[in-house]
Length: 174
Image 1 (cartoon, rainbow, N blue to C red):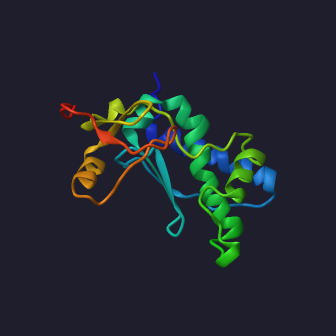
Image 2 (cartoon, rainbow, N blue to C red):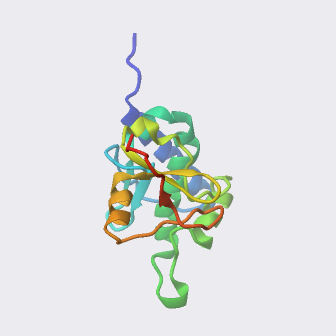
């Protein structure tokens, strides 16, 4: 009986498939990046442009494998492709992380709607959070963000109602 492929091997195969798709669509080769499954925190993945690396969050990958393969891997590969195609640019020609070039790669190479953030359930991370509220809903802030609020270093606002987030009275951390 053969062994199942490791998560690292599955991610590497998907990254390679994304590059093959890009090479077929764009008509040029691209070097393959180093792949690491060692990212921590709330982000699902990141692309390190200067060192040509992709990093992925193992806890979020484990809990959302299909979405990782369908969305996160192409998202991060698109960042590397944009860097290879357009560089960083300067001034008005600056390439933004989720700007028009990245959006065009997502649409035209991967046939995906360009989304800048994931909506994975972060409970699998086991991180403590603090309850904050705005005018329309409750929010969960990480310990790091909560401490920034306490020290007066940051204020956060709801993306929906744009009201400032305030600590929910009487709410202990989870």
